[in-house]
Length: 547
Image 1: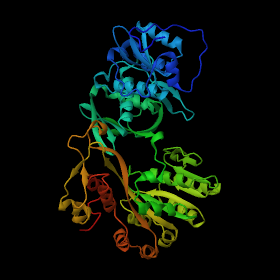
Image 2: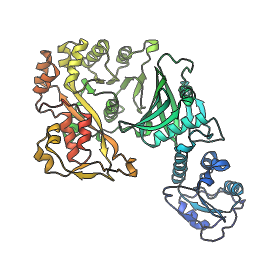
Image 3: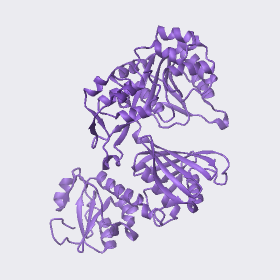
Image 4: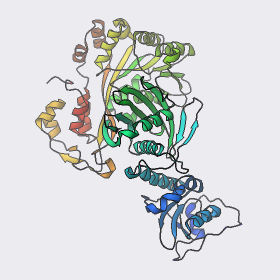
């Protein structure tokens, strides 16, 4: 076996000794005379080492043998492995490259991370985006949806398959929530939504459009011949060992079908109330609301504002063996252990209303309805809350008081709203400043006025904004990650009086003088150095406060 302390490592030889398991890899490395590294850092082997016939070492071979190439010299090949006793595998690699091995021992998770890191770099390489490459490993799950692993490689395959795989791989690596594939008269444009903001990432020749769109539709089990009607599908995918669900939506446009793919990383769902970004006051109130025995708690906001994530966090907080919790959603975005989740299916007339009606026969303690869209669903939710059930749901309104007006517009009687509704949480998601490059800034009187904050409050504190150039950590945007801002409307006697009068949302807001607006909650995030003034102003309404 090769020894990293020697200038001329000995060739790897087969051993008749049975493999021995060691709990301490560093101890094993010492016994074998090899170097141990707890971390491999940023792995960037020479391109000639990982392209061509050798790319198997980053796919099936690398993952099977738990080995990753680090470098190559005239005398030797440098590799890292978590299984230095696999002499046969190392001997095969040495024979393939025709050089003795210099072996570094590292933890398995480090070796796998290094393999995925190198593959990410390769698949994101724009210059090779439409060259033959790795083949996606495909199978079908029990629901008939295509299951794909874009990180396992065999040999070459169609250039379009490589391109689509690379696109998804890059989106996941850059924390994109959506991939937009948009056809125009003379080009095909690709954009990623990262931290809620769309960014141009690629443009392809129009001649590739049909093949790229067809490949995505095949992956999502959609009808590739149907180009006149919108379609919805799903892709189950494994990226760098992580399960990711992709919701696919197509709509016909003048220059071809436009496709949006929403990436849902099951490993990154926030199921902790503390991670939602609630202020200390709101956090305490919400925790009191979600342990009530009956009533309705609503979360409002536009599409993509994190409403479902907030409800998941609430359900996870109260989930216990003594509670029967059931949900009806469209779609089921994340699986919650210990909770019964149903997905609506309009094709068979399984709607929110019919699903909610069925749930009530299952003796539930807590119910979550993905969205209240019509009077029938609203009335069943109200009746459920009045008969001893705690109901969570969402509404598409701009603020918390608007939820009451929306229920009135649907036709729900005011006395039913007043007696069943416990509280309404309105929220938005805003980008957080990159902690590595944020810089101090001066505050203007106009900015304070836009936020509705006393200038002395902000000017007396250290405020941050984005760096002019950004940094590698935030992909040179100045922002990294998102957090929530909220306003909370509690239904007290004053609000109930306004509800019974059928007051509009502005009257209800005036009656709740202690309710902090979304902008004021955003101002707290600014004072805490979490986000910038520009970001708070961008995501909140211009008429959030009357100046």
